Length: 298
Image 1 (cartoon, one colour):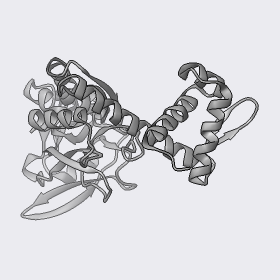
Image 2: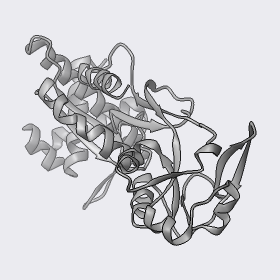
Image 3: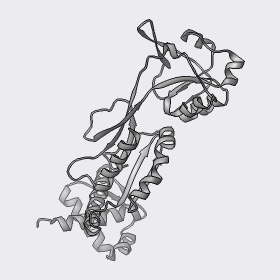
Image 4: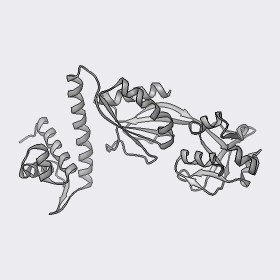
């Protein structure tokens, strides 16, 4: 017997409830179903797909890799259905939850200050905001929108350009008074350079001299996985660092950090994108949030 769209939506709802609650009986209580009805629904999904979605023991239910994929798709489809119904019932006003992933420094300094305005403009949308430098898998349903820096890898996701940023070498006045200011890039060999720990096995900073680009290996006592930490260390006089302009613009303006070696700055730019699952079925709540970011961050 062929399963209808309504039946499949109900099956997805049951499967998501089991994954969330961890048992058939708890899922049944959530959905007003008997445990046996829940079990039959899961069996029916697995039989139709021809794969095992859950590993069941007397004590615990564990999702297989296929189960994780099905869960991510089910949650996305159910959210889209809910969004479509609510948009229609609320005369077109977008609503629902938008899960957003942003890097620590850029998210805190550039995106968080915008969220209050967005909440006032779209009171029916709930922003679920996560600051992390871990790259989340948008295609697998770990987030609805992720803000990414640098070149993007080939993927089925849609990307919307939000802007770009350069990088500046900085140190605090206190550090420079103690160690002196480098006059040429090679002087950095005598300084404590604070670098990222995830970009290259051999840490190098790019420079340009007489129209020629080259890279210089730098060393220092501390490495970190985000620009905000490196900026804090530079502000504390620990050393010299090279980070995104958005991380240090305010500190440079107030004199708490001093830009260095600007005559040798290669002017490299790093694009900033919002990535998301696009297409004709893109939820209105995601579309308006991405549009808002693109307008405000441009």
